[in-house]
Amino acid sequence: MEMKLAAMPIAASLALAIAACLSPAAAGSQPVVADRDQSAAVGAMLSQSWGVGAKDRGNAGPTTTAAWDARSDLGSMYALAASSGAESAWRADGAGITGLGVTVAVIDTGISPVRGLNAAGKVVNGPDLSAEGSSKATRYVDSFGHGTNMAGIIAGNDSSAATGVQGAAAPFRGIAPDAQLLNMKVASGDGAVDVSSVIAAVDWVVAHRSDDGMNVRVINLSSGVSTSAPYTVDPLAEAVERAWAAGIVVVAAAGNDGGTADLTMPAADPYVIAVGSSDNQGTSALADDLLSTFTNPGTAVRGPDLLAPGKSVVSLRVPGSTVDQEHPEGLVAGDTAGRYFRGTGTSQAAAVVSGAVALLLQATPSLTPDQVKYVLEASAEPMPAESNPARGAGQVNIERALSLPTPSATTALQSWTAAAPIGSIAAAIIATATTTAWHWSAWHWSAWHWSAWHWSAWHWSAWHWSAWHWSAWHWSAWHWSAWHWSAWHWSAWHWSAWHWS
Image (cartoon, rainbow, N blue to C red):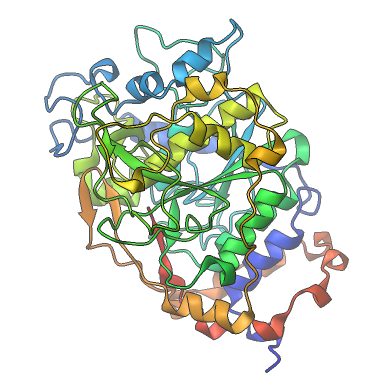
């Protein structure tokens, strides 16, 4: 039955419309650099005392009321930059490889302008596809607390200068501290997101990857959706493959269900880089590292491609966010400045790998996504203490990856069957998708219910449609004939299916 455009859920139609035709020019401006006027409110919250002495079960660092020191915490970015080989990259060839000139798109819950992410030009805001995008007060910012944490791991930087080393004071620096971040917000303060917004965000990134000085070469998806259908009929798989074909490396979290769980989508697509979490076993040595038990192992056909540190990782915090308020146990004991939040999961591991990819692409910009994936797998730490095939190629080793010669395009070429979803099947995939828990620190937040969109709760009268400058929308750019509306059964979309890894 042919579907009329008017029957599409409003949020989905807005998301798709924005993604398809809202370019910086159409919006009447360039991509929006994170508002500096929001920093005052964030700064006021940061000045408060937060959670010193809170429980830190599963913490790789000391449980103490003394001042926290990144240099003595295995989960700090100070430690991870050293163990992953990122710090060696920063010092490489004197000039240093820091991610400079590479933009990483973070499709997540938003990025707040906290210290480490508030330097001029550090974060560029794409369209806000969440329910909070209509309000200036909530647009772009991370009211949930997940996206900012991931952004910090990827490219946080307390200094706008590429110093190449971490000083004695251990300033906060992500894996690729000089990379730029593209903020693609798709979820609101409750973490709810519809899958169409994620697909729309991926497509927007592909279409605008080179706008206004950006150089988007990486998409980080520290989230996913459970599905039992093959990737070849999944609409999200098709979207990430479009990005891959456009020269953008897609890094996706494997999922946090553990046991015998399949990889979540889009990590289940064999083209992308699926990342599981490694457990440092409480030591700085790499030889004893194991697969984190919560990592989805996948199947013999499709498991994680490689692992990265994901246990008790300390990154940037959004004071007052949902996670911050509901899970104070994630606060870092002794963090008197109230800047940090500790999380565990494949989300964190994926963010580490996205930072690693940014370093590789600065060093060798000509690398294709297939070549990047090949190099990361070929250079991975073998993990001799771990026999589970879900370890993939092993644990990411950035220093070794940078030292490998570039493989030929033929050698690195992937030739999997491309995703080509059929409307009714794609709808059924979303209809049968299930929600799983999001892991913060070492806990399984099974109490998190990723509820569906409560459309009755939307106060549509609050939308100031007159503020939309419709004349700026380039409707002629829409190739409506290319959209097979009759194939999409929108009523089958279950918006609760998405979960943050």
